[in-house]
Image 1 (tube, rainbow, N blue to C red):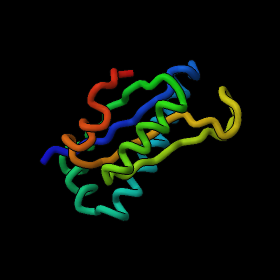
Image 2: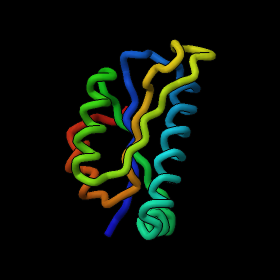
Image 3: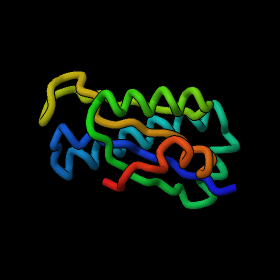
Length: 117
């Protein structure tokens, strides 16, 4: 079974490429560590398959929270990232959501219609 991780990024924040990259890295690592502790076989399979990641865009915080709820209701592990506010966005701004790693099919049921960043 193919595994992947998806990271959703808010487009309304208009973050720089560097800021987006840092936030995506935070989200990916946070979710991966959660999966490693809760579903170690999923983490291992994802790791062996090359750690596939896809970065997608969402409109705003409301949309990220909606996808977080849908994913969690499907049993997917998620990680919400809130920025410390030291550079481009105010403190506690929700910037990204990582989903998985988990079954590619299961994640696609949640995020399949979203566009690449």
